[in-house]
Image (cartoon, rainbow, N blue to C red):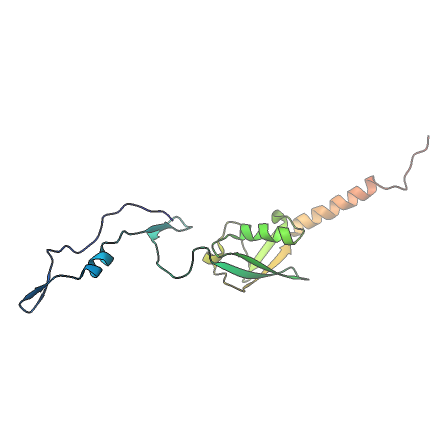
Length: 158
């Protein structure tokens, strides 16, 4: 949260309300509400907006169900995290590195820098995890080359 000094906006006591012939001053509670300092927050897109007063905490945790075609993983993560953060959490559960993962939500592959709450991911939503085919292919070629080099049946006798 970013806190900026701003001008205090309040109703001056000189502006009194008239009810008939009586002059009525605003109540002190009303003045305190109007004279409170404005709190600002910086949104992920870079926009500076007035902070919302809500009952939900800023660190709201959501549970995302991730499918890896053969298994389901329930991952608890902050709603304001990115898909890159989700990949890091999934790398602990699966054997895939974050660069080897492709996350698909609502039919589209998502970038690492996209925020979950900005895309619309909510509690108990489903995300599909796929292994990147290019990296999978490179692993298979590397494994094939490694088998031919380390073949124990080829021995040289002197």
